Length: 198
Picture 1 (cartoon, rainbow, N blue to C red):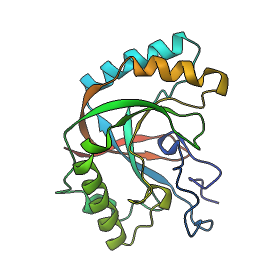
Picture 2: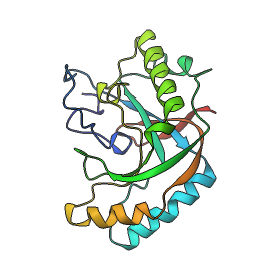
Picture 3: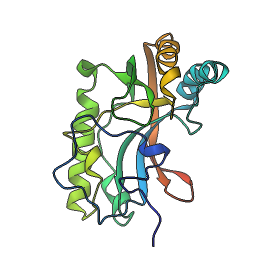
């Protein structure tokens, strides 16, 4: 059986599940093999690494992958590269809130304020539509109506540490970040590759 993202086995680029309840169809027969993400640029990675190191010193589990905003999980890479040219996504964004994502696996994240994510949501919706047009199935938890854009810093944080971790991360917000491109993470092999530069 092909290893991939399933409802009970999500990888670090698929770290949380939205709070809006289960989607109408659970997609239990689909294996999601790759995750696409909007990756922060080098200087933004360094800025957020200060928060990660502070959380680590406090004993908080952190995500050691490059900082990113997950856009979607897909069941195939066939046709994906062809839908990315001309996709309009923001180059910069202010992350203004530190939150524990509800119904997540202990994810402490930085989230953009809702009034600042219009361009990001429009680009995400366009990506979703282009992928559907190319015959690529996406994990519906990351569909436009359920998507919660965020940058994960703490990952699988135990309940006893969550309030403190959120407080530490809040000390690093607001922070303006820039994006370098769209990456693809392969489930199972943990390979990370840049697909498109912004």
